[in-house]
Length: 358
Image (cartoon, rainbow, N blue to C red; front, top):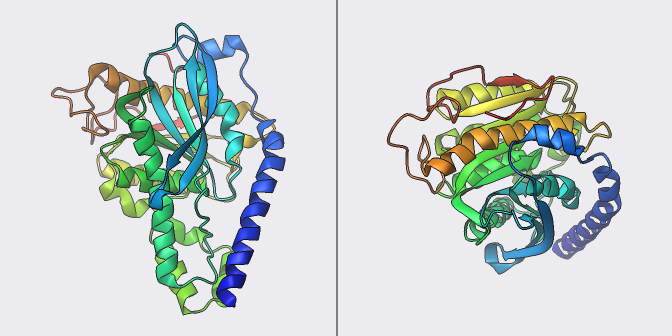
């Protein structure tokens, strides 16, 4: 009885979330405006193309389909292969709202697959009624669903075979590190927009504390276990370069989490950058003031140019990450920092927006 009721509630919750996503996506996307042509020309030195968008599905864990949309450069000058990015939405979803950014990056020469990683299953952080082992298994299947997106892009004929950049937002930014740990030979870089890097304080919100208070033993075990599954625990499994983007005024995930995680990454010799946006709060990519989001796009393109494209041009990477072999000689400073070499300050204060041209 309880199991059927729980399944029914889960189904209703999923349907409600999808309807809310459809209703809210146009509103949220309204805050994501495209840059004027002159500003796009300043944003990146790469030639502009058209952009095509098509529905895309791939088999996730257990063969269940994961739905998404794939944006690719189009037009006579479009490259035969592009560096490809996998977008992971945040905890609430709203995955269709990433369409404007996917198209903007496609016009700059990148391929972007943005997915609904809840297509096959929804894992609620509170997960109030399931046995502990089932909750853990469902989270691992959810992460495998995302990792299969890396597999799909790595095998796609329009994607550069040098590796996939995993880009996550909020909880998706945290999950991006799990995906990279699952596919270290296929991930060329990791980008996290306002992600959480230590879960323990994030599990201390009033609603989760309340759920914990009334939880059974399985619920308490889940809360304690999940708090230990944060990106900080994965540093030993991460090899690809990292870009963290965070708002200084983030009241949901304090920016100090990003600065502390940057130090931890550097301590392991992982090339990492942090862009702090001084006036931005959480979810700044969907603010009605698009300046923070477009500054973040500038940092993203800058990072891809220095850390990913330069390695693809050379056919090797300074750390041997992704599908590329290690570079036999030192890499120029403007391309990527050597592991263990901090170089210039990796903390970028986004005011004004950076010019990514070398």
